Length: 276
Image (cartoon, rainbow, N blue to C red; front, side):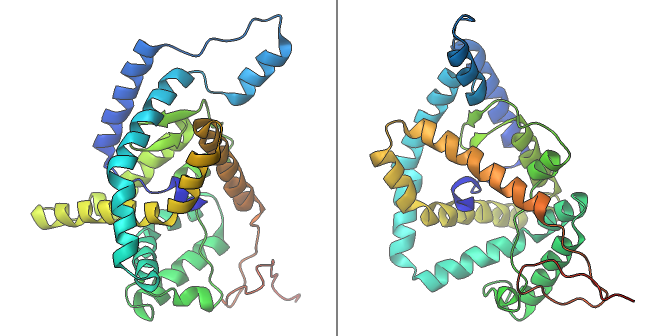
């Protein structure tokens, strides 16, 4: 499910432009009409959905769907047809490895030293024995990948998710997760280390390959939702929120202790240092 909502790597500048455009359209399109106060069940449902600009969100969903159907999905199908599974998995592993600095920073900010240790060990092992991350050797050694971003860091601090947003290109989000996305992109060394045409080209290449790789992973489930769901927009909204809630729960419940001599926790259970 992570792949369904984590394929976006625009620059911070492009994100700001998209947000401003979204706010302008929202102002023109207006908000969803709240139910009358004398209908408490409808009012409760309206508040639970927390989608006050649903008409605008649905416009952006339609635009994104059209772009996906015309461009990204066909490219992802071609990518699947040309490259065997082992190559696609390796490319995905490299992209995950490149995102280590951002995940490590959030592991530290959330006060999860064991997660930070796993992330660090994964980077060193996979960057060397895993051939720059192409092979996930670390997972076989017990260092499992965890997903952390600044949106989850804010959530862990008690920041509410805010109203649902469906943004151009970025897809489902909310004020908290959008803020987290911008911070993560700004913190990514690829956005500020180096300069020149080659660096810019590498950055955009990473963006394009990431989008194609992630889209290929969810070709089948997305197609199934579009074909069978009575309201695909509502389904994607629900799935996004369920996914973020599940990731936050896993983050909060990961209270593994840091031990004197580092070694992987293969069973995924809390390991405490021996009693003295």
